[in-house]
Image (tube, rainbow, N blue to C red; front, side):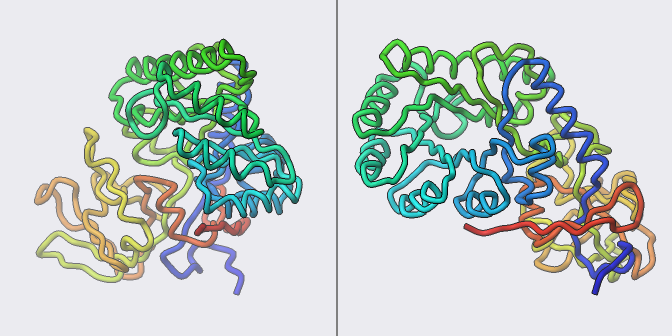
Length: 379
């Protein structure tokens, strides 16, 4: 059955505000054009061909993926220049070979001598040259080789000796999510640039072409002032934004694109609770705002039009039940809305919440559903 209005939707359901999405994309693309750097959007947030085409400016272009299943899906939709931005391992090489055979220019990443040795041994049997980026640790947040580490050069040489194209370096400034001011975000963007560019320079001094210097995080991309030496930026969550990004002052609440439509199913007024049919299966368990100045619980509650309902949040989530209450326990009364009322909940983490759903119900400033976009999941 086709629904023409969100009022007809069975809940929970994932909504996408297309006008906001286009505005967010334009903001990022304008920023990177000003900085004179190429864009390779990370499509792990959207996992949807229509959104990815919009992110690339209206036609398939270079993209970043987080699973090889995404690579298959986007190749099916005309994307042929794909960076798989999770460390490569031997058990994925058969899948890599299949993508190369169908004409995809696939680039993989790695950050250790062990991975380089394994990749080099498999590369000899591939039907096409494999490109690799060496992951750099720019902030101590996650993975990568330190820019000044001797291992950087030994990894590169192992790859080259095995016939793998040492395409360059990449990093992700995950530490930007811990920044608490515009100045801190700007400083992190400069650190991300400097350390990654330095790593590329060391590779070139050792005789490797290393043409690619790839950086990526939404906060640093939007707060960078100078990306000299960087060749491309990967960012993903900017397309939808979320409450974590709003908590970093990277976006406003009104910039958040996706929300979960839910229905009030009951009350526990003596506790100040309103019960809805969106629990953690609809929202995810992500509680990413709990370390920020404003804790949004499991999501910020809005009316059906997307307007924030003051200080009401999803304070608790069971599998299929969500509990709405005032963020300051006991400071406010229960949200007085009738059973059957539809509400929207803005997510802490757009990637995690979207991953709970199979499609987007696309709206554009009204209750009318203008499109339905399928999304993929899994590995």
